[in-house]
Length: 152
Image 1: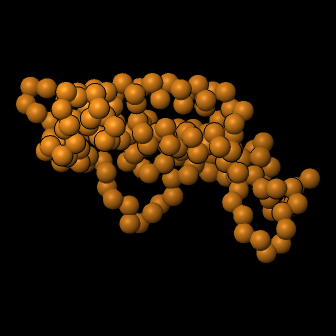
Image 2: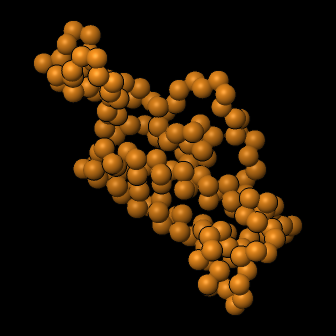
Protein backbone atom coordinates (compact mmCIF):
# COMPACT_ATOMS: atom_id res chain seq x y z
CA UNK A 1 0.00 0.00 0.00
CA UNK A 2 2.77 2.48 0.85
CA UNK A 3 6.06 2.71 -1.01
CA UNK A 4 9.11 1.61 0.97
CA UNK A 5 10.20 5.20 1.63
CA UNK A 6 6.73 6.64 2.44
CA UNK A 7 5.64 6.90 6.08
CA UNK A 8 2.59 4.97 7.21
CA UNK A 9 0.08 7.62 8.44
CA UNK A 10 -0.81 5.43 11.43
CA UNK A 11 2.75 5.79 12.75
CA UNK A 12 3.51 9.36 11.63
CA UNK A 13 4.28 12.10 14.14
CA UNK A 14 2.82 15.61 13.91
CA UNK A 15 5.67 16.78 11.68
CA UNK A 16 4.99 14.13 9.02
CA UNK A 17 2.11 14.02 6.56
CA UNK A 18 0.41 11.51 4.33
CA UNK A 19 0.78 11.33 0.58
CA UNK A 20 -1.66 10.14 -2.04
CA UNK A 21 -1.33 6.39 -2.49
CA UNK A 22 -0.23 6.66 -6.12
CA UNK A 23 1.35 10.12 -6.28
CA UNK A 24 2.58 10.78 -9.85
CA UNK A 25 6.27 11.25 -10.49
CA UNK A 26 7.71 14.75 -10.96
CA UNK A 27 4.60 16.52 -9.70
CA UNK A 28 4.99 18.82 -6.70
CA UNK A 29 2.72 18.08 -3.79
CA UNK A 30 2.17 18.96 -0.16
CA UNK A 31 1.61 16.08 2.28
CA UNK A 32 -1.68 16.19 4.19
CA UNK A 33 -1.47 17.12 7.85
CA UNK A 34 -2.25 14.33 10.32
CA UNK A 35 -5.60 14.25 12.15
CA UNK A 36 -5.81 15.69 15.68
CA UNK A 37 -2.38 17.37 15.66
CA UNK A 38 -0.90 18.93 18.81
CA UNK A 39 -1.58 22.66 19.21
CA UNK A 40 0.19 25.62 20.81
CA UNK A 41 -1.58 28.06 23.13
CA UNK A 42 -2.88 31.14 21.31
CA UNK A 43 0.04 33.43 22.25
CA UNK A 44 2.60 30.70 21.47
CA UNK A 45 0.87 30.21 18.12
CA UNK A 46 1.19 33.92 17.33
CA UNK A 47 4.84 33.90 18.45
CA UNK A 48 5.70 30.84 16.34
CA UNK A 49 3.68 31.72 13.26
CA UNK A 50 1.66 28.50 13.42
CA UNK A 51 -0.87 26.86 15.71
CA UNK A 52 0.70 23.45 15.10
CA UNK A 53 4.14 22.47 16.50
CA UNK A 54 4.50 19.94 13.67
CA UNK A 55 4.43 22.80 11.15
CA UNK A 56 6.87 24.96 13.12
CA UNK A 57 9.83 25.07 10.78
CA UNK A 58 13.05 26.76 11.89
CA UNK A 59 12.80 29.91 9.81
CA UNK A 60 15.93 31.95 10.37
CA UNK A 61 14.33 35.31 9.55
CA UNK A 62 11.49 34.88 12.07
CA UNK A 63 10.82 38.02 14.08
CA UNK A 64 11.04 37.33 17.78
CA UNK A 65 7.46 38.04 18.79
CA UNK A 66 8.00 36.80 22.36
CA UNK A 67 8.54 40.41 23.38
CA UNK A 68 5.05 41.48 22.28
CA UNK A 69 3.32 43.36 25.08
CA UNK A 70 0.27 41.74 26.63
CA UNK A 71 -2.37 44.22 25.48
CA UNK A 72 -5.97 43.85 24.36
CA UNK A 73 -4.73 44.25 20.76
CA UNK A 74 -2.16 41.43 20.96
CA UNK A 75 -4.74 39.20 22.65
CA UNK A 76 -7.16 39.92 19.80
CA UNK A 77 -4.44 39.28 17.21
CA UNK A 78 -3.59 35.95 18.85
CA UNK A 79 -7.24 34.87 18.86
CA UNK A 80 -7.69 35.86 15.20
CA UNK A 81 -4.49 34.01 14.29
CA UNK A 82 -5.69 30.81 15.99
CA UNK A 83 -9.07 31.13 14.22
CA UNK A 84 -7.31 31.41 10.85
CA UNK A 85 -5.08 28.41 11.58
CA UNK A 86 -8.05 26.31 12.69
CA UNK A 87 -10.00 27.34 9.57
CA UNK A 88 -7.10 26.27 7.33
CA UNK A 89 -6.91 22.93 9.15
CA UNK A 90 -10.69 22.45 8.85
CA UNK A 91 -10.47 23.13 5.10
CA UNK A 92 -8.58 19.83 4.77
CA UNK A 93 -10.11 18.02 7.77
CA UNK A 94 -13.80 19.04 7.72
CA UNK A 95 -14.95 15.98 9.66
CA UNK A 96 -12.72 16.69 12.69
CA UNK A 97 -15.47 17.50 15.19
CA UNK A 98 -13.03 18.35 17.99
CA UNK A 99 -11.28 20.95 15.83
CA UNK A 100 -14.62 22.44 14.75
CA UNK A 101 -15.76 22.73 18.37
CA UNK A 102 -12.47 24.42 19.20
CA UNK A 103 -13.03 26.77 16.23
CA UNK A 104 -16.46 27.68 17.63
CA UNK A 105 -15.01 28.35 21.10
CA UNK A 106 -12.25 30.57 19.71
CA UNK A 107 -14.77 32.42 17.51
CA UNK A 108 -16.79 33.27 20.63
CA UNK A 109 -13.64 34.38 22.48
CA UNK A 110 -12.58 36.52 19.50
CA UNK A 111 -16.00 38.16 19.30
CA UNK A 112 -15.85 39.10 22.99
CA UNK A 113 -12.22 40.30 22.77
CA UNK A 114 -13.05 42.42 19.71
CA UNK A 115 -16.02 44.06 21.43
CA UNK A 116 -13.90 44.71 24.54
CA UNK A 117 -11.12 46.23 22.44
CA UNK A 118 -13.48 48.48 20.47
CA UNK A 119 -14.95 49.73 23.75
CA UNK A 120 -11.57 50.82 25.15
CA UNK A 121 -9.46 51.39 22.02
CA UNK A 122 -11.92 52.44 19.36
CA UNK A 123 -13.01 50.81 16.12
CA UNK A 124 -10.79 48.35 14.31
CA UNK A 125 -12.92 48.16 11.15
CA UNK A 126 -14.96 50.97 9.61
CA UNK A 127 -18.23 49.16 10.18
CA UNK A 128 -17.63 49.26 13.92
CA UNK A 129 -18.01 53.05 13.84
CA UNK A 130 -21.72 52.55 13.16
CA UNK A 131 -22.14 51.52 16.81
CA UNK A 132 -20.76 54.89 17.98
CA UNK A 133 -22.70 58.08 18.50
CA UNK A 134 -20.41 59.89 16.02
CA UNK A 135 -18.14 58.84 13.17
CA UNK A 136 -14.95 57.89 15.01
CA UNK A 137 -12.91 56.15 12.33
CA UNK A 138 -10.29 58.84 11.80
CA UNK A 139 -9.64 59.58 15.47
CA UNK A 140 -6.30 58.73 17.09
CA UNK A 141 -4.94 56.42 18.22
CA UNK A 142 -5.21 54.03 15.30
CA UNK A 143 -5.50 50.38 16.42
CA UNK A 144 -1.85 49.63 15.63
CA UNK A 145 -0.74 52.66 17.67
CA UNK A 146 -2.84 51.79 20.72
CA UNK A 147 -1.04 51.60 24.05
CA UNK A 148 -2.84 50.42 27.13
CA UNK A 149 -4.06 53.32 29.22
CA UNK A 150 -3.12 53.62 32.89
CA UNK A 151 -5.61 51.97 35.21
CA UNK A 152 -7.41 49.96 32.49
